[in-house]
Length: 177
Image (tube, rainbow, N blue to C red):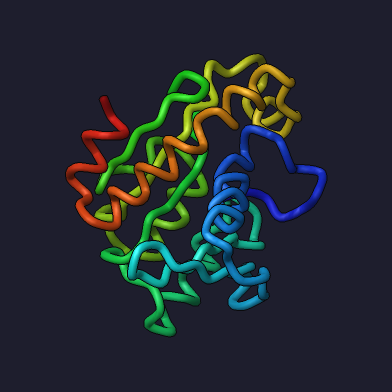
């Protein structure tokens, strides 16, 4: 998840989109195409076709885009991994959960509402600790040190996603230890 405008690039709230851009490049994904209030790129990972989806509805309304894919039968809770930032985790820390609450994240809350269940896998990227007003913090560009720290985590995220495709439980161990 992230926010669709250029002004939000390299902000804590857009790390989910940054990961998708990285994966698109790593796996030679197709050009971004608009569909269902989203940008979509198709990649092949191992023998699986994977759709990278960036909702264009802004973070807190991500569920609106997700709901369109659910209605078309293109997305279910079993074939989906939501990637988003989390203020409650230290910067750069990764956590994979296969179900649970939104943890107060309004974008994830919107997605869970669209699925009508809390049994949706999610990879959380730590952006904490918050500094000052959380709304301002998540939309303020990251400094060079944090950008470097984040970029250094991208190969680990890629490796973890390869594990996730094969075995979600093993992927939890990989990300959470």
